[in-house]
Image (cartoon, rainbow, N blue to C red):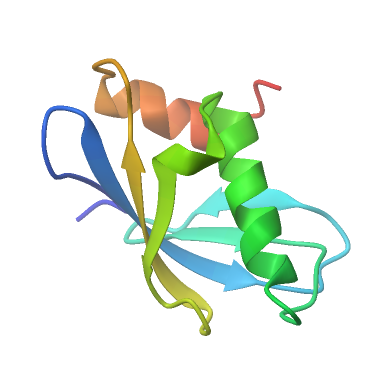
Length: 101
């Protein structure tokens, strides 16, 4: 099973495990979920904001297309992403994991 699940033609969910207060910001594919290392501490929603910003930057989409649907206050999260145009699953995975900034 993959961390990326197709919900509809333009919607995908991503299973994420967040590691906060990290020295470097990076995304690692662990098979069933993505492990995302963030610089922020989980205080006053800073880590969630950094997470949304990182995904937005990697996928080149706006932040209103990204929604945390579960795990708002935990390290295990499910994120819903709505794309404006159809993208292949492999393309989304490559953009998330490989730095294309």
